[in-house]
Amino acid sequence: MNQRTALCLAGLLLAAAPPAHAGDLFDGGRLLATGGVTQVEGAAGAGLTTWAVITGYGTEHGVGVNAHHTFVALDDFTFNASGVAVGLFDRVELSYTHQWFDTRKAGGRLGLGDGFTFSQDVVGAKVRLLGDAVYDQDTWLPQIAVGLQYKHAAKSAVLAAVGAGGNDGTDFYIAATKVLLRQSLLLDVTARLTKANQFGLLGFGNAGGADYRLEWEFSAVYLITRRLVGGIDYRTKPDNLAFAHEGDAAAVYLAWFAGKNLSVTLAGVDLGPIALQGRQRGVYLSVQAGF
Image 1 (cartoon, helix red, strand yellow):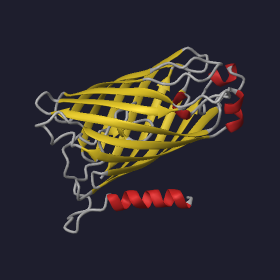
Image 2 (tube, helix red, strand yellow):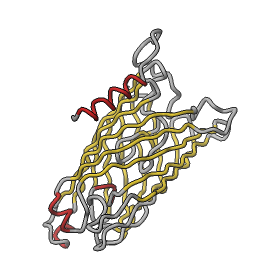
Image 3 (cartoon, one colour):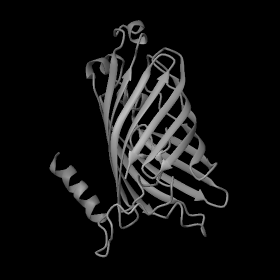
């Protein structure tokens, strides 16, 4: 870790420091499901989208910690992701996720070999700026957070061969999340600046030096029961690579909260066309456990 990164993380921790009268560190004082689940890059949100909420159930006096694993079976590919996230005093979120993307027999058709696997590491940080998604019911002001996700993809030689401009990049985003308790509804809009190809698994930008693009993420979630929610996600993506078109992604899902320590998300996903293999649809399963 370089000196500049260390100073930035130290600043985040100091900004999130609790008041002297803080009680139990893992107080779990927030309402069930209000921390969301873990999205594919490791942040609190839904399956595809990043929300302004902070992971875990810690209040302004507490800390929350989550671990997750996500599995997605597509028509021609298999995606997995595992990681951890920490929420500090309902103000700062830090996360790490490792992703791997198995090309199965499509790898042979692409000249890479059956079962060729792309992978990447994602390190994220999020800071809540203002608002409270749940408790500010007397105003339309949403909870607003800003964040970044630094991504480092493996197989740099292969990524260069398919036309990517590099194998690492940083996404920047601002998210706005509002819970309407009377309507049992959560709404989110997130704006993301990114160069990532297929979330970063196929590198960043292109050989022509593609610049950052503004992309959008949308979520709508309905509380069916106290423990069960249903929702939809839609996420736009850049289309940088000349060899293959990249489209937007969408998901329809159910998330079940056994309690504040365990949640399970099941979804149908459409990730758009991937690497000349046509539109990729499949099943998404994610398990999150924490305290």
